[in-house]
Length: 63
Image (cartoon, rainbow, N blue to C red; front, side, top):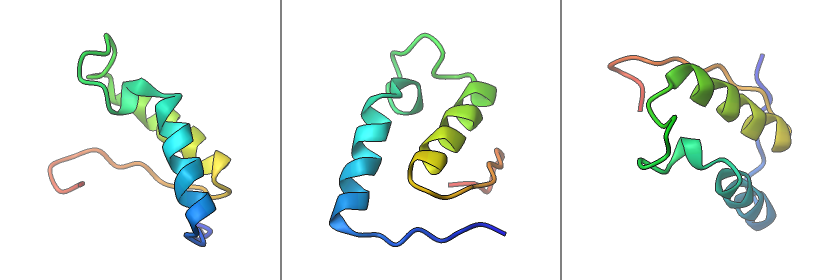
């Protein structure tokens, strides 16, 4: 079962910092931007840093 994140201002700032450290998740000019296998790993790392675990599903209905 996933642990819910208590979204505070500090959590939001931490999320932004975690994403800045992982441009593969947001920078379309990144050489590995299209590698969904790597993105899943990096999203899991972001979740761990925020104190949560997530399940990554890639497909048409995932936003």
